[in-house]
Length: 197
Image (tube, rainbow, N blue to C red; front, side, top):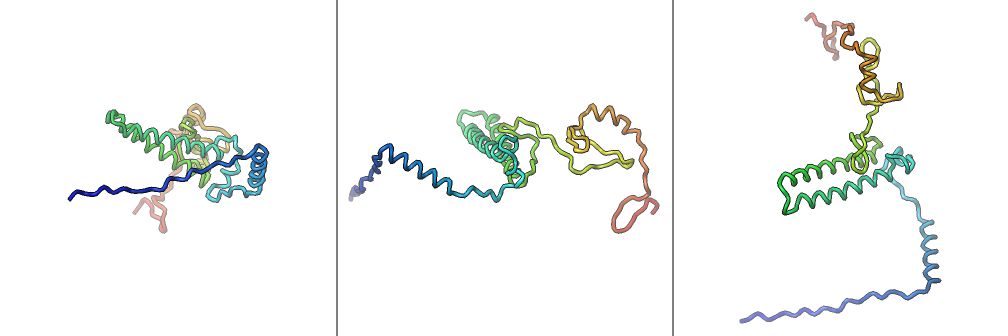
């Protein structure tokens, strides 16, 4: 008993014919599409922070720029994934590509977090993460004698500039020689514990 050959008959696909229209009709269709686009409501970005939307388009951290960074980074991820899966790739190169993919995915998460909250949490920004982000101090800390504590590389709004190493060395070189007033309180909880127990 030999198997019979089964023949499947298919209907030929219909070819969609394009309409033959004149230039006047094309122009009328273009005008109609322009009018329809004008009537359409602008997009409402409910998941985007208001501060991000309020930034002008030429600002570094504008919504448009950050979306562009995300798109560029996703393209980089796809090329790195292809590189990691290649046959003629050394294991070290494969591991490097895999690590870079993880780093790029984290960068996309930082960008998406910024779009949702308006707070940039990464150390670098830009299409290729080429710009270092300067952290900003929003709540000052003080030494017991009342002078503000400062860290190098952070923007302080009270002096309206980034604190540098030169400022740290020149103005507060004697930080080690300070004498702080020490109280007898060891810990503060719902009860006061003192050193002489």
